[in-house]
Length: 62
Image (cartoon, rainbow, N blue to C red; front, side):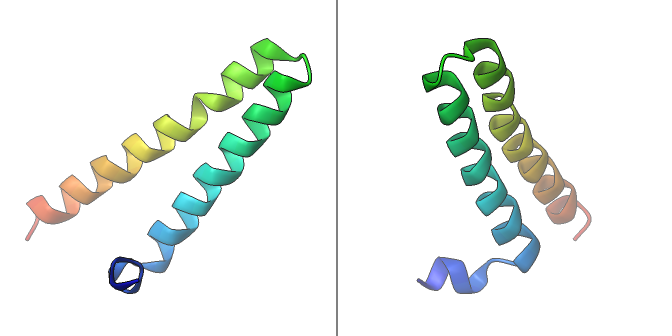
């Protein structure tokens, strides 16, 4: 709980967005649209990578 309280609203939003992307990708993959499921599934790690990059920039400027 303490971790969530320390997080900024933008980070919480992006993590929820990643969860939604993973659910949509799983749905697409399991319903037979495998290529689109894989394509959409790659968005979540990309978004997480952008989050990490922005955190590094933020901590580097301090």
